[in-house]
Image (cartoon, rainbow, N blue to C red; front, side, top):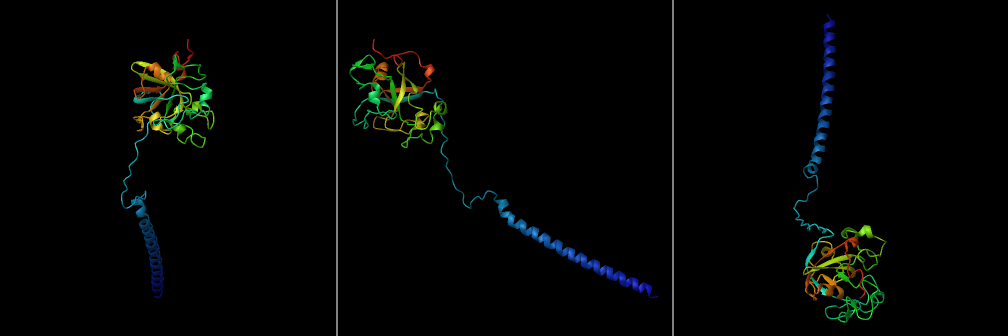
Amino acid sequence: MNRPRVSLVLLSSVFATGMAEASSLAEKLAARHEALLEERREELPRLSDPFGVPDRAILVIEPTPWQRLPVAAWRGNVVATVFWVGEMPTQNNPMPNLASAWDPNWVDNFGGYDHPVRREGFCPEGFVPKLNPFYVALPYNDIGADGYHRPEASEVIPWFWQDFRGDGVSVCKGRWIAIHQAGKVCYAQWEDVGPFQTDHWQYVFGGAEPRDNRNGGAGIDVSPAVRDFLELRSGDRVQWRFVEARDVPEGPWHDWSPR
């Protein structure tokens, strides 16, 4: 008669143990679930604002991207002024031209004073220049005051790495330029920097207009030889562009000796 009672006791014990284990497991699951929820709560701000955008919007106006003109593109309607080797300072030309931006002995290397009035052909009277009398100045110097290339030079000058010969050696000096005016085209070499500006790469290599200056916004200086070939006056408007040396035709810019 005692056996059923024992079985009942055993079953009750097993049931109680199972209930305790189930309760413990439920508590563990509840604790783990709460921990998971807390972790999600902490992540929620970052998920809703993954890039850390500030509470208030900030208006950012980006500058218009600079675009380099094709090397052979014409720069049009540019005021040209006349300058010359050996020119002394005047009201509209505050810097003497005894030296150029890239040649401290410009007058001596040229062979003398490139007189703008006393001329023999396309040369100054009395001597044949040792350097090309067809020269121009543009308002950009690729060499900075520290004697090294400007930081932007390698980015804005199309032929920079093609002509690079070391720090402090200009890749602009001697570059050929075509100048057009009234149906005639003259060829000259870039030998100095101006008028007035020395850092206006946005105009020289891009599509910007020349900066205002006391010479009516002039954007190119031309030599007396260029003036005489084109029959222009200082202040006239011209078009100009870069050209490769191989594309420069025969003319007095290659053989300037008076005949």
